[in-house]
Structures are given as C-alpha cells and as structure tokens.
Length: 336
Image 1: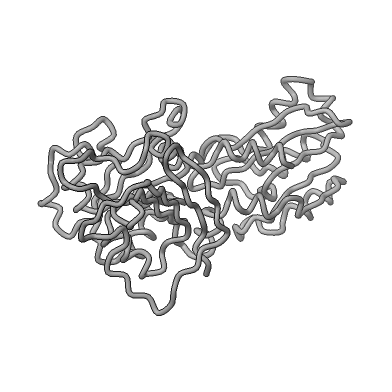
Image 2: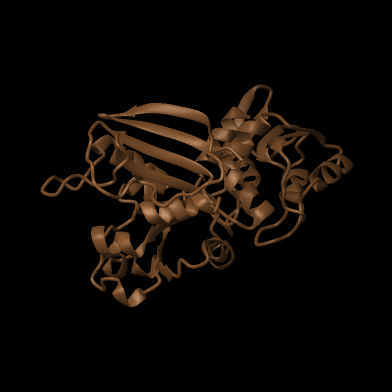
C-alpha cells in the first residue's frame, strides 16, 4: 500500500476534479505493475496498474493477483468505465484498498460487486495516509469548498516587505524553489488586486518537470475595481493569460465555491497581502498554512495578516518545522 500511496502522490495537483489515486498489482511477492490516475478523463489508477502488469507479464500472470489501491474502486460509469468491472475482467483474486470513496455514486458499492465475483476484499489499510493525500477531494465532496492553503514569506516581525531601497525578496532561493513545488500541488492560486498592482506576480509553475503534463494553475485575482488592474501585468499578458480569472472579493465563500463548480478546482494556494489573508482567516476558509520565516527584522505598517478579529485563537496542528536554506519553513493544519 505504501507503494500505491507513492504512486498516488504523483497525481497531486493534476487530477481535479478527480482525486489523486495510486494502485499496484502484486503476485507471489512480486510487483507486476503500478499506475496512477493522471488526469480527469484518463484511465483510473487500477486500470493503469493492470495495463502495466499485462504489458510486463501477460494477461494470464495477472489472474489471481492482488491489487492494492488507495481509494475504493469506482463502481459507476462516468467518463471512464468502472474500475470494479476492470478488476473482475482481469481475474484478480484479492483487492485491498485504503479508504472508502465519499462520492455517493461509489460509496460502499465496490465490496459487494467484487465479492459477488469471488474476489476477496480488504479495506482500511493505511487509510489515514490515503485520506491525507485526498483531503482536498474529500473536503469538496463534504462542503463544496476547496482545500485552501495560505502561503506566506515573512520576516521575524511578521512583515511581508523589506525597507525601501532593499531587494524584493524576503525568502531565500531555497524557499522560492519550495514554493514552486507548492504551486504544483494545487489547482488555483488566489491573490488580490493590490498584490497585482504592487508586485506584478506571474504566479506560475516555472520548473519544467513540475508543470509537464498539466496546465498552469488557475490564477484568480480578487478585485472590486477590475479597471484599476494594470493591463500590462504578466497575469494578463503572458502565454497563460487565459488561465487568469478576475472575481469580486465581496463574497469569499462564493468565489471558492464557484471555482469548484466552474473550474473543477479541488485545492487553492493563497499568495496575497495581509488584508486578504486576514479576511480569509476571519471567514474560516483557511485549512493549512505554510510560512517561510526569514532571519531579518523589517518593520513597516502592514503585517502578514491584517485586520484580523477572531473570537478565539486559531490553533495549528500537527506542526512540521523544516529548514529551507537560511529560512525556516513552518507547515501545519488549522485545527477545527
């Protein structure tokens, strides 16, 4: 199952509106084939793994094998045929999956179909690890809202910018490279009109191997006055300008729900100034934080999270602390 989870990790940020799923085919202790779901409309992980096993070892060798998959196999016909049918047709003897599918069209149906075909079924193996990989998908299914990650590079005194006359960057090169990996894990990046006017960010994945085989994330600009946005900013002039959306910031939950419905978004990365960040925290819309702490004191009037009025402190757990070059990266979930 850990091998299947590693396969699932390859699909994070690529499969929306579907979940990232991995699968492996094993027989007599030998790995016959592995696969992962690459994009909506393409074969699911089980069929990818079965096809790889047949290519490598032949159809007869696959009969009687065990398939490990990170999510309950689908049992309804959508853009692709049901994976339960594929498993039955392949003649596998056993299916082990990590967690149940929260989609009502699949929930709990695979066990009965597979067992009726004489296939042994086991579930719950490494379910917590699998649910972590798929938590954006599960959140959308439960709430209609995407998983929202707040990313921020700040000084030790909680400021986003350096004093006038100094360089643009607070974070070091290693932290900026890590942000590229964060962008590759999400379907959309949310920013403010103020940030576009001040910084003119591109908000793209610029590492070829991270963007290969996937579109750039949607770039969503929240602005109450779109006419004030600079028409020559990269978001509106680069080769990915068709991936830029402008939305009003008056209804933050509505914007996020709209991204789920209209663009199929599962996960959003927030790269914005203190005012929008504070509003998102205040509205209870942030699920995860990633903060890069730079070893400097910068001063200035606007903090990383501004205007925040909460009835109680937000607690973060579990806390992961790592070193990124000269910076310290803190990553944690917002405790509900």
